[in-house]
Image 1: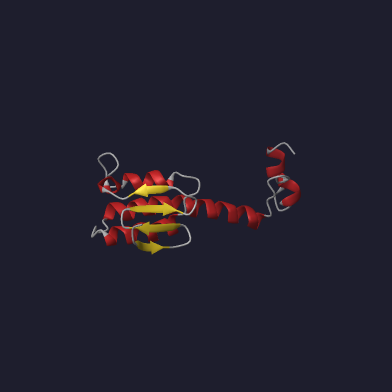
Image 2: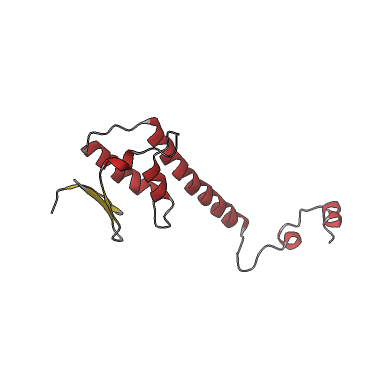
Length: 129
């Protein structure tokens, strides 16, 4: 068994691999620092970010520990990759919060005129109410 380098609620980082708590195991070798296409974004980071079980914050902690252990420095491309991943999560959270703030129930939907009585008569007329 190899030495544990880092552990959080989602990931355990060993000297030679990262293991997600659900059992997904990724070998740590040179390809995790490859760039996507000809741009600065890190391909492996973005690939993991497409998984439905992926949590950016926990992964960033673990991946940072793995890079640090192997003496690989963070670069702007990696930071942009994490920003891109977090951006999607931020958008989703903002959308869900807006739904909650508006009292939206996906099962029921919104009755525009009942739930928003401030809509003026002209708007109702244009919308065919």
